[in-house]
Length: 293
Image (cartoon, rainbow, N blue to C red; front, side):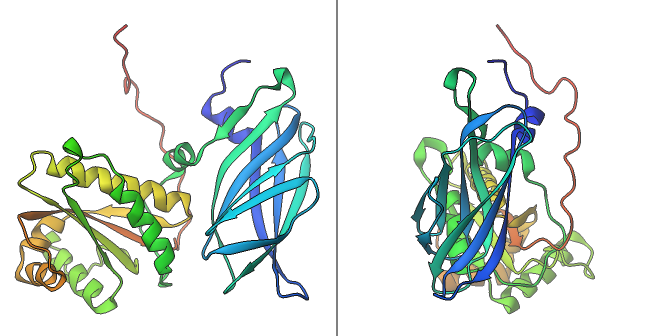
């Protein structure tokens, strides 16, 4: 089978989801629309992230679905022809109205040689589709979503696995606004909001006693950016955390949390629901990659 480039992969199988109300038993119904291009497929799979934990009530007979927390994986055993279109429904139970926050692991099995074609795994999808968002809705994220994103940061690589970083989630609006004002003053534009209206700010600091502390903290932020993208959450790296946490107010925040040691601010990751259309990626520059063979 010939190699697939990124554009070919994106065009192979497209999955979109829409809510379809609540049935008589109180189950939440969602309809998944699968549009297939490129080759015939006799099996398709994908995953959905929801804003809250869910349980599966019912799915069609040709679909196998498994729920783990707020993540549901689907596998459909039925042929789709080139340029085919099908809709798959699922009924879920949850403590509150669930919202779809991410679509992942889109995969299809073509008839050609029965070989699996990996359309896009969640990491690759997040890498290719992530953009910096600079306008946010005021709606607060659930603590469950924030925890998932922070957890991804805690699994970032670090020098000798020293895990030199700490992550502070700031959802208190008064603290968030005061940090924004301090950041704007440091930047020299006191009329601006450097956090772009985002309701959540994740501040990452790292222990300066570790020789790799800047790299460690940067990898933490990178992991969290990709996790946010996978979950359908907008994000943007904002600088000047170093100056913020060298200020009296920044030191007070650390003391309030019981954080002691030689910590330096590496950066902020602001989070929220995007209030702007995501831009297309700029073309990659020439001479970006090289081989020594």
